[in-house]
Length: 405
Image (cartoon, rainbow, N blue to C red; front, top):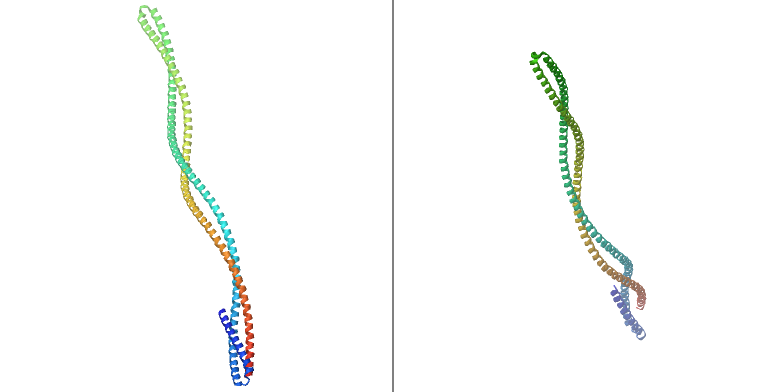
């Protein structure tokens, strides 16, 4: 469009120059050749034609100038709009630069936090490893304790069986001692009866001795006739004496038997007391062993539960350990990414600074361009005004030329 304006301006200049030359010739011809009317008329026709051409050219120049002015005004408006957009872009660049700086600061804070998180993750992983080792030790201890408890329970059950057998044996011994005591008492009672019988025999022996003595006295009184009776009386007396002696020996033996029987009864009574105490202690031992067996069973069950729970904890600890390893890997990846972000943020900050500077320069350039566009618009308005004046002058010349013709 500017090239068109320049071309039109050059054409207008040429036309103006030609017009000036023609006017000079007309003036010289008017003063020097008044008598050459035909030549003057012909020249006037040419002038009129030339003025018409100039007028038409000026109309084209005017239209072109108006188009150029319109384009320049549009360019001015577009330039001002660009300038506003550039100012907005500059403000956005400032905001972006500020945001990028803030993001970079946040990235540094995140980097510091991630570094602390990595340290905590390492400490946690170490603690998890120690906890896993401790849980395994607890699981092994619980397993060993469960085995020991099972062995104790089995021993207690064997002891319980032995105590029950002892209690049964004590009961049988008690029954046997009761039977022995009853038998000894019965024997003592019978021995007592024998003693009573021996007393009767002893009384009979005394009476037999008296009878033998009386028979001896009677035989002595009978003389020769009583000699045989005396022999019988002597034999009866000897038999009575022997019977009395045997009875006394039997009484002594029976008394000894009765004494030993009483001692046996007393011993059996003491034995029964001991057996009763032993039976009571055995029962208490049985109850204690029953409690031990029950307690051992409960302990064994609880230890089995603990062992199962610790095994589950071991599995959980292993899973936690694997998870912590994954966390450590992810934290390392995050640390690497954050470091790359820090490096990238520095580049972004540099680019943002460059963009801000370029935006500032573009803003200045667009302002200058806007000012220049406004100046061009003002110049084009002046050109349009001058073109209108030239058009008016051409119109006046055309009218005057027609009057001359």
